[in-house]
Length: 341
Ligand code: NAD
Ligand code: TYD
Image (cartoon, rainbow, N blue to C red; front, side, top):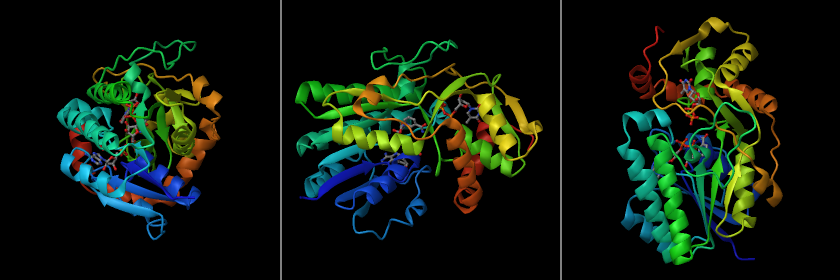
């Protein structure tokens, strides 16, 4: 059987990084290429355990660098592309929207041109439920694949734009593709600017945890490994041209998430500090995953088992997140939050 070549963009980041490890270990007969620019959110130290394997390759490129991307695709003739690379943090998109358009929209379009040029077997575009906008705090409504796109933040608008380009390349040029729209992920190697790793790292250091607004906004949490399994399934079995929502019915208010982490670590709720709300803060996200379940996916983690595993991982991998929070991150944190400690 011919070896398949899979290109994973953004494979030095949180979800792409977990996906690279998942694929390298699960498919020794596939060559897995990790393409990443190594922005503030990317690091290769997470791949120490796989970097010597014969089926793992790394290439440092900007997805928006047309010339380099085109020649890389011509040279390697990838069979599949799993596209994770993006600017991914809503707060940063509020202070600096331009880079979100550059990477998420223009970068995706360059990849689409390259994928079209070499006739890839499948382009899987990893998107987000945030493209659907927000739901009311009403536990009976969910995002389906038919929900209209109504992005509210520059981040989700840039992701929605890239989704539409992927769709257009399918309709116009016949590019084989799937789009996946996942709820909030958590798990190992999550960059500590996002709610769960930020809370764990700060609680472990006895530092205040900033909770936006009244803490009642709701997110639907999915363990990153369950997301990786979903992408693997869609890559191999997804029906050409279809969109799949990914989520596990794990809705929690932000304040519940923060309190769960504090009590698991045996610390005081005095660490919670309510701060000024995020601009345009979406109230609630919640996914109806029926379509993906029919394809054969089901999550292995509940929120309870997943958050316990994740907290353990942060306890056992302090070196990884300390190297991040002791670097440039300190300037970001000071600018983003004005906390007493
Ligand atoms: P992340 O910020 O942790 O990682 C992004 C990676 O992309 C980093 O390694 C970064 O170096 C790389 N990158 C950024 N700009 C690049 C460029 N121009 N060229 C090449 N590489 C570049 O993000 P994540 O949380 O792992 O998210 C991955 C994907 O999943 C994104 O597309 C995001 O929109 C989507 N998503 C994320 C979530 C979530 O909860 N984190 C949920 C649903 C969907
Ligand atoms: P985040 O992890 O940034 O993911 P997203 O904005 O993509 O959902 O935020 C998750 C929720 O937590 C969101 O409702 C905003 C809230 N939040 C805080 O309350 N404080 C924080 O410091 C951060 C980063 C997020």
